[in-house]
Length: 269
Image (tube, rainbow, N blue to C red; front, side, top):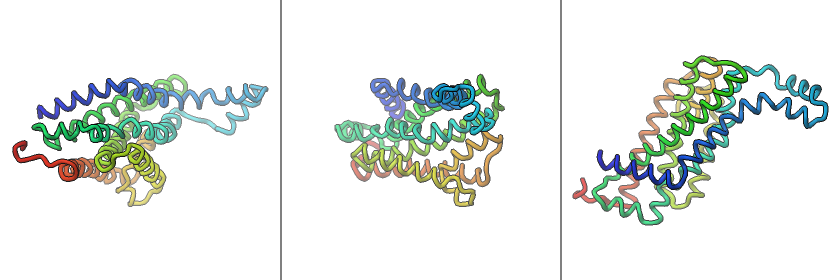
């Protein structure tokens, strides 16, 4: 495991050099703050733009209806993180392996006493940590403003929603990782990754047993937990299958990295 830790620290240094540890958490924090602030001040802003602030604002407020803290927090997941947030996340992660593959660094690393599984796990844990901190900052920044403007939500629901949604993002991390091994173009990885995530999210609104096999259904469950304090139907099976998919993607990444591009000799075992 020493190699895993060494590669993990190397990846952390690279993420600092590329400023990912700065700009990605900041972007997620901004996305998190946008939803509660926008929902709270939108009637006033639109009213001011319309001339008669009081009448326009009241009309917009009537159209929006009564919005509570749970709805605003759930909207942060579904409207901010699930759309622009995932696209930004894929852009941030898509070059992790491709850049090293194209500049020869990956070939150099795997000719050292390093196994493919050590390289993949170091990459995955490093990216997972970055995603965890970025999501956490954005998520709890959103809750901070929701609490100030709309009131509190049960903390059990808040933490459960965060944990469930994080598993969905771990699937994204794992998918982008294997795409980086298969393809040499970051544009291709971005298009396939973002397109696949969008398709999964579009079909996650259905309430059939088939959602067990849709990792994006975790996002719908996270939203439902924040809204109602409870998960949707088929959640347990969906969580188990999603974790299994993550394990399968990591295993395939290791096999592809070993077979397609490099052959690590027995002296490295």
